[in-house]
Length: 195
Length: 194
Image (cartoon, rainbow over all chains, first blue to last red; front, top):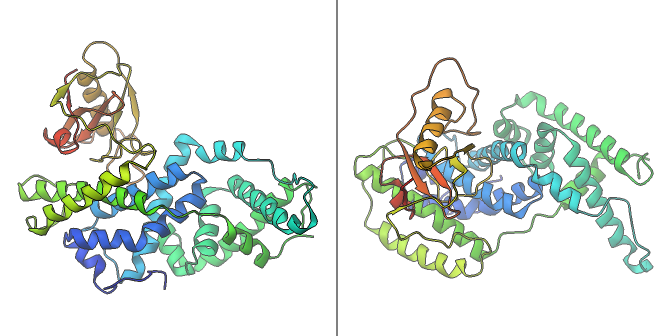
């Protein structure tokens, strides 16, 4: 599953819950990079990604006795959910993602490189486009797409992370993809999709 | 022609997410472990911990681990841009920033975390006293809460504010934390003298 390589996956969270500081350090080492990766993709800012990653683990420690995990497979989705909440709050206050995007080159503008680098230029253009399109989506759509597609969570794990009914994840994902596709078409060089 | 679901997913998966450097990761862990250890110390001393719950007194390995992590963080701090390097040595200090203070929802040494508590506008001589009053008002109104997203909806019924303490942050502004009087010292900050 998504829990990564844990030395004692069946007991890690219970050890953290019991106040085992070494287990908490182990938890951090097991999941910090995954949480940071999500925060970076979600915020587009290395500073926000680091700040929120730290805040996520502090919150995990603070709530260690109130959160029950059925297994350690549930830990990472829960951490992602905490991160998503913190990022939504941070986004409302600071809008760093928008500043990040404003500083990035506009999508669809490709310099006249030699043919051998055209493919790479196309990929870079597409990545700028998808990043800009993601920024136009609502928090729910963006979190759903990133957790499902980029982080590889199952629908049940996404449901647990975002607090939505598990049965609605697939339909929400379909709608989110449609909105992403429409946003990319609107932002693309022709304004009508690049497909 | 519109992109297929698979094409969209491939692009989303390709969005870059650079890993933290080992130095950054260890510095972050060291800062977290400082707070974990301080929390356990408070609990061992019979003070309400950050997260509540049942935790035994500190183990003998804790201080040894803390020293090891702090030593690692000291090396990492040399290369981590913007890391908190200003460690206060005064027990009491007057705030250098006199017009704004920050209310923290919990005890943290990451003083610049985004979205964690509101700023309040202060003026006049007794910045610390004003900050304590204004932050207490944030807590009692329900606008500031200790759980994510740390911002609540103010309601008609006042919520008891936790004990608050005013410290001087590395920025020179007053930071108001929930906690007992020794919280500033635990964070390596001077208490605010006004």
